[in-house]
Length: 489
Image (tube, rainbow, N blue to C red; front, side):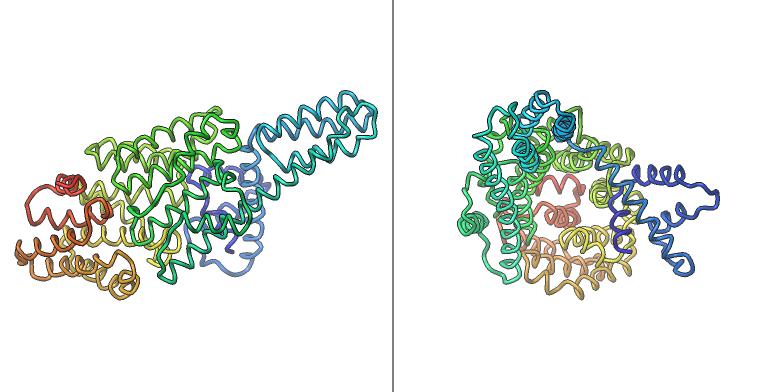
């Protein structure tokens, strides 16, 4: 069942609709139950567990695999397909004893594969060269072994690089669990040295994207993005427009720019974040907008964050609504966009719409933590607490605070999020005393919270929650107060 759940959960709303059409087109009987079964899985309604249930589930899994594999093939990199076509036709020509033409196509396939650094395809090409090297039409018989050895070395280095980043992620996680200080650059250098990898091998879009994701994990740990050292940033401009800036690497290029922009946003460097937002849009348009649709939710999230925290909340909300309506976002992306939409609605005092948006998050805290991580879950819960205080549903707000304190106190104390505990305590005092808490008490706690670290080291989302309490103290609008805190006013 987990395979079916995973295959269904990774589908956007538009893909779900297309899959239903796909099932209907394959059904030969009017009473087929696969569409109904798919909708049950999609909606989490799995109560029908007897009779033909498991047979239906097995058939649904087969159809899902067919559908997803067709989508993958449909979106396959055209450059790779071109190489494969050349290779296949060359092999057919060899069988038909059209040797001169076969070698010409094989040479064309080799050059195309070299251009995109596709080592596994090159291996097949050199295998075909060697297999037919006894023929008189073979021009470079003596150089084949050298080419083969060089390509095999490249394959080994490529796999070593993947192993290196897997090792870095594992060590990073171990350091986190042990509470040790983390120096990402040192971890990377040590790992590369142990695996005897050249540091220059790190500089391609795939490896930089992997490294950027690790820095994002580092920043998310304890909301400490101010500690993130983007020591590899200079390599991005060197790679752009180089021979490595190919269609094959485009998705890694896009992901790299997104993570860089997100990191700078969390560092409160909105100008640099906007630079990467713009660069991301440029890459999304390349190769006939190949990855535009799948990248649009990420771009929308990052652009709307920058817009909202630079005073353009209306435009931020507009592009979020537009993106959601297009049905390109997968479940996790939809959650991120919806949570930001709720945040903007709350900051603008649109409590009715904010409550409606948050109502879509009906699953358990444990489920959301497993899908999005602790930070995401805490942000959602903080938002709910403040919303229901504003709606004067004090019992619900109190229950959410108690749940947080009961289930996450240990984690909050071990993270930089520990400052949230006194904040929640003050929030609780605020509504329990029928709003009789004094402005002096609020100011005292807020000053203590802000004095714990300088503005540039503070997390922007925690600032947003502190802003709510400060706005109660000053009487100023929440959004104005939020921008003031973020800008250090």
